[in-house]
Image (tube, rainbow, N blue to C red):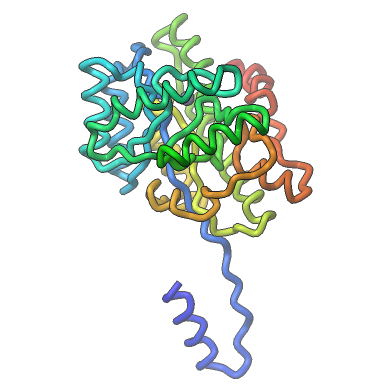
Length: 304
Ligand SMILES: [Zn+2]
C-alpha cells in the first residue's frame, strides 16, 4: 500500500500528465486443510504424507490452518501429527469430533460433538476457536442455521468459511482407487489434473470476489489431509505463485471482515463467495463447467 502510494506520488511529481495507474487486484490465498483422516497408506505412509505437507508450507513460507476432526487423531500417531502442526505455527481449528452432517442431524448432537472436539484440541498451543462445518453444511434450513450461529457465538467460535473449493477430495478418491488396483500407477496425470484444477478454481472464485466488489479479498482455500496433497501440494503452491497468487497466512485471512458475514441464503455446502454472489443477483455462481459433478466427466474422459 505504502509502496503503491509512494509510486503514484512519484509518478505525478515527474510529469504533468501522469498516466492513470492501473492496479491489478492482489490475488492472495491461504491454505486450509480439513479432516486429518490419516488412514490411507499406499505410495506414501501417513507420516511421510504429513512431513511432505509441512515441508511444502515451509518451502513457500506459509502458515496454514488445519481443521481437525477429533476421531481421526484421538490416538498416539494422530496426536503426534496435530502436535507437529502446532509446533510449526499453523493454526489448529475445530471440525467436530465425528464429522457428521450438521444439516441432517439434530443441532444438540452436533453441538455436543463440537464441544467434545474442543476439549480434545485445547491442549495444542496453536488451537484457536475457529470452526468449520463438515461438508460445509451450515445447517440446511434458516432456523437451524440461526441455531448454530447463536451457539457458535455463545461459545466464542468464528465460522471459518471457505472461499475457494478445490475438489481435492474427489480427485484423491479417484486416485486412491487407482492405487488400490495398482500401487505403481503413473500419478503424473493426476498431478497435472489437480494442479490445473486448483489454479482454474482459484481464478474462478477470484473472479466472483471481483464481481461482488472484494478484489483484494484474502481467500481461504479448502483442501484435505490426503495422499494427493502429500504428493503434490508443493506443485500446487508453486503453480499458484506462477499464476500471480501470493500466500497469506490463514490467521490473517480470517481476520478479513468477509469471514464475519452471515448471509441469509443457505450455504448448501458452497463457497461463501457463491452465496454472496447469488445474493447480489449474479446467476453464474457455480463451478466452471469442467468441474460440474466435481469433475467426474473430465476425469472419465482422461481415464483418471
Ligand atoms: Zn471435512
